[in-house]
Length: 417
Image (cartoon, rainbow, N blue to C red; front, side, top):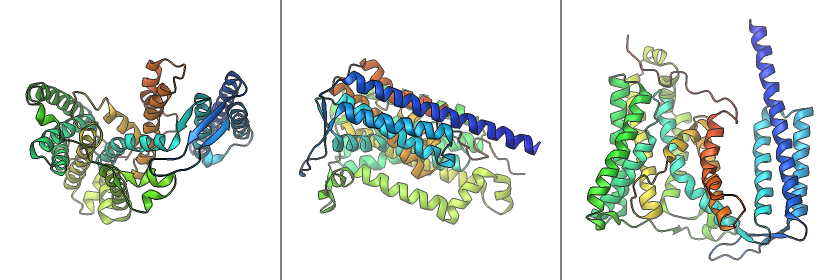
């Protein structure tokens, strides 16, 4: 049986490797078609400067550049089919996707100008709530509790942040209220899932419906009559001296609002806490084998409660971003399903903070891309462009990037014997 299992895994692996090679060749063919469709004599201009910095633009002849990229994709596809890249195939997949996106942008920006710095800045900003939501899921599911209530926590945190921020006149008080709101909803999820052992998916759906309903009701009743309570303002861009003046990289990383800097700090803290501390070991142990953890004296239910509430605080902070870091007001349904995209980013990132951030950048880029392509008047229907982030979500959840293994006790209530 062991031998048969090894052979079966080998067959699956070979099938996936063949599929990857075919995908690389397909992307190469599409890139070649774009080069032919572009025609000769076109030039794409990519801006590399931002406000306060002057960097020469990068100009590429469209057809030759896209053909070179197509040849590179074809080479990688052929190499994958003939020899394969082994465990590095997903790294190569990232390179292939990056090259194809570059070819597509070169084709889309023919005889136009596209500022790459502003595009990357927008990608980073759009990834902030997705990263925070994904880390909320990481903290919850690493302890064994499924949290699909991130969307409801986003909405509730966004509403509270706008209301309290406007009433108090302080953006920081509004941000804190959003975090507290996320923690309260997470506590409700923890009580339902841990104490009363309600099905965790059902409990999450209930909180999502509650968050959407209560914010829509209060928004219609309160904000429509007292509009001054829905005008908290936004956190302004903080330019870090010297670092913000570094060409290209400086404007992207060191000229942002407070949410971006908080995101970077929290990614580092959560990663170190989960994988380099005793607390993180306890959290992961109750998510993998709660009975063994209980036998060693670890308080399983307490660790789960604490992790879920910490995850709710992350989601509340992500919700506050929508009002205090983005548009400066609350609108009904403004999160537009990004809580579920954050869940996909968590899965894509394999339940790790750094992986979740990388996945959130992918989704943020898909969101940014549809906006930039609309500005460039690319001959693609706007409905298809708006679908881009959600199509990427479906592909990720469907397992295109490989099968991800959740914590062994994820979603399983624990009853102390």
